[in-house]
Image 1 (cartoon, one colour):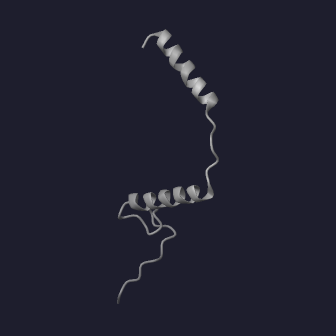
Image 2: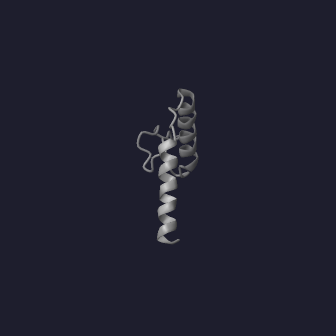
Image 3: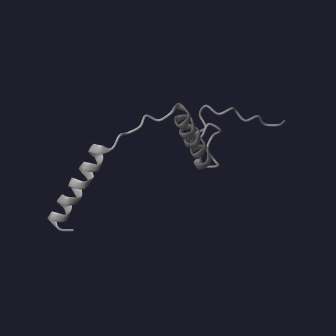
Amino acid sequence: MSDDDAEAFLREVRAALATARPEEPSLDSLQRLMTWLQTTEMEEAPPEAGRDGTEDGEGAAPEVSEP
């Protein structure tokens, strides 16, 4: 990409950003995003992690051994 091409591209990007009107997200969309993030985090927790998703299990319920 030549310098002229890069400058033209940057001008186009700046013009697009100047005309963009960001929208405030709705409460519903924020809640859906939060739910998705929590679900994704739980799915990615390693199986040996504690119930709360931490590596050391701190905060997890203690295991009860049968006598």
